[in-house]
Image 1 (cartoon, helix red, strand yellow):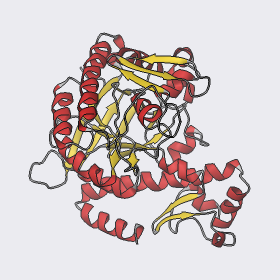
Image 2: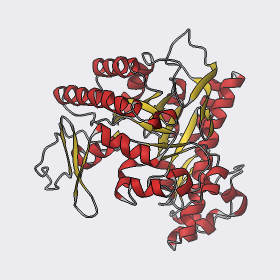
Image 3: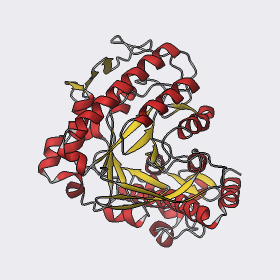
Image 4: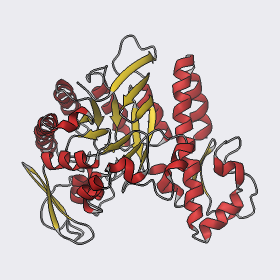
Length: 405
């Protein structure tokens, strides 16, 4: 029996397709998540520069933390001794943790490369190896059939993750929703390597699930399996069939995408995954991508984007993103976004927050992060209401035309 319950309340009209937007509720041991929902990233057990109360006030229902980073510091056993992530963070709502699988990608094949969740690198194949890459930057993660060896990016000490180890760590952390261990691949990997990596991900998914089900934690923590497969339609569908056939509580859609491939990959996968279980699109947060993901049947999404760009002076507005470090905002006494009801917009001007950024005051990161999280969470909340009202297409058209004008 699953530790979470998922109920679909309404769907967008799409003639019975599984890849269709839906309004739902995920009930977890620490409260409900009204979906679709944006999930804030709290990598090391904190959303950078914000208190838990500020995160909640910005409209966030749940946070996802990073297994790799928490394993290294303060250590998963230390978190358990503190009473688990909820108590340690003083967060009473639902929590999620990733598997550490993305670090296989970011510390291995993507290390020293211009490749993230959305890849812009078209330089050709990138293959994992123990030797330095062509730029002379040594990769600090290597993969074998059973797991991944990586070096602590701080001390250089060696560690080894297997599927069982990843789940054990996540059991100690104690989040409501955890993820199976997987390998994230770059979109420009060879077909041979994509297939090889997918075979590993599928074996690791079964091992993750078997280990999880053998422990008492399976009664209080839900496990999501992750679909991979790169940009290949064949592999994506194969992965959705395989992962969807296993007794997971929900599903993640993983991978690093070429921008133009993402919608196709999400559609292929969601047409196959069981309709009655929640789906999380991992690491995606651009407004247009969120509209696409909601429309194609994703329920959850997470991204460091809103807080990362906030710390560099980037601000979301209804007319698009602005940069407060631009000279014109020195004397701009208006609020960040006209009509916004967030704490920042109610109390501070662009010129003041721009001054804080130029002065590198910590308050700058707090105020812009509050606004950006509020902006994204409000946008997704309005998508939900628009689906309930039957006005999703109108809201999508109005928002995107203004934002990208």
